[in-house]
Length: 165
Image (tube, rainbow, N blue to C red; front, side, top):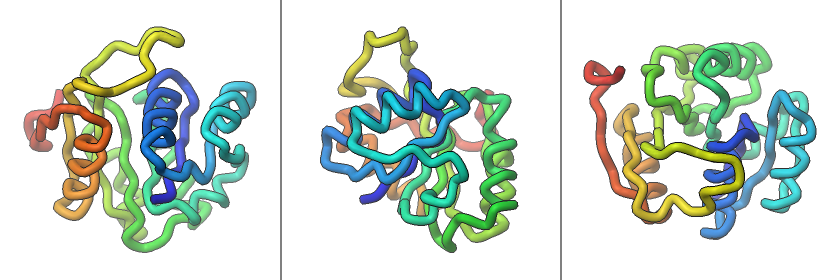
């Protein structure tokens, strides 16, 4: 599967690297920090996307930015009209609910969240094996995210929208 990563910080780097090691194709990496995006893109044999246009090639988009920027990124993706109908878009926040992805959902994206219940110190974690992951989403996205968590060797915790922090 083709995956795009938006946010090349600690979570985005660990997630992209783990997926790449499982055989996922990381089709693009985007980040506020060009240096971080270039570093991650090199590790996962990908390209840096500065305008989000490469996002359309991905089947799955992970928004791994800080919580405050998730809705901003979703709004930009919707404004640029780069998503395909039924493309999966996940955020990785433990606190944000699915409403932050409303702009892309209105364009036909299937939304959800995956939040590893793990602290991410710089260059410390290289695997998500055994890590509990809180997930949520529309029915179709839950099927996909459960598969991903299993492949990563993680443990699934489905958190209903009304129970989110």
